[in-house]
Image (cartoon, rainbow, N blue to C red; front, side, top):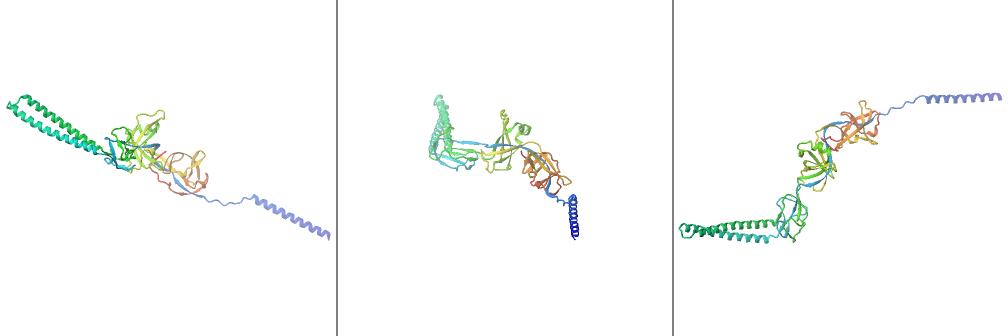
Length: 389
């Protein structure tokens, strides 16, 4: 009986051992067999072909706006200011009255000169009549020739006095007109430095009554480096035809177009620059002398360029790159050299060819070597004919 139990226990232990060995064998086989993994779907990215376009290469500079004409308004006669006819900072037209100087003394001077002229005219008439009578009497030998000569002299003297009296009247009237101080040019006035009740003296000394600057056109002065001068300006026969564009401090782009007005006659040997002045229309009067201005100069003929969207450009430490999608939709890493930009599009000077496709949206979802699902789009912003550095 005990032998039967022992045999039964031995058989059960052997069965358990066989079961453990079988399970271990099956597990090992399962680990050795590769597990099939489902393929990841291709990532969809926005892809656009690089754009080839002819552009003009521009060079950008900083400058200041200057008035074409600036006038210190000064009195041409002395007297008391009785009226100021403008509002500080207002725009005025040529001929507008700015100040009035008390005209009473000058009206009196005109009246005196008119009276003097009338007296001289009467004398001229008298001496002329005397001369006519003397000429008749000399013909009859009634008076000597000397008397005729004296009356001729008196008549000529009266004529000279008449011209002097007329000149004095003209001066008196001119001085009276100067009591109305008018704008010699159209433009914008400063504040009135001399107000009503103050006495002013004629002449160029002393404080001006106000200053007046022209509004349109307006100058922008800036310094151009030697290379730009030689490439864009000196090589052009008519330097005043070189195009320029202007942008203000609060503008992202260049809002106004103009041309070079004049170039200085010498290069500064210290800075290696030459002074250039450009001319711009300012019909709206928004440009004010003294404002900071961004000016770009272009003079080269349009050149072929490859342009891409700014968003398509990535940064790898000190390098710039784009992700190119090949004909097999595989992504490749491409270092690029960048040039100037315009309205969100960047000129690529090296690394890309016209017609190649690049990722413009979704770069973070793609890596070099990946196969992607390209979605054809256009470059986000339209390309223009102008490029700036």
